[in-house]
Length: 129
Image (cartoon, rainbow, N blue to C red; front, side, top):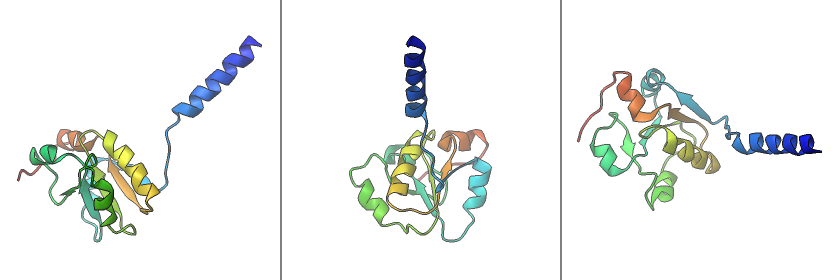
């Protein structure tokens, strides 16, 4: 009886800890992001705060603050049929943002693994306003 309870407990923990996976979302390296940025009709979004954005951003990306009260309105202005490239500081916010974009019907989302921190670590430049 005790073994069955422990087994059920372990199964429940593994189910609750399992991350959601979406076909629409793909984690990409900084090198892959650099290549994807060259595609036509791709939407480049930095979801950090305006303060973080001013500290340095990847050229060509527009700032749409994920923490902003207007975030949902702002992303509705994007084309859901075109790919979206996202990044934040370390990748945590983009995971939540990607989930929201999928729920809103976006067809393809690329998420920079490790965020702008990994971008800099890989030797790529940031622009300053």
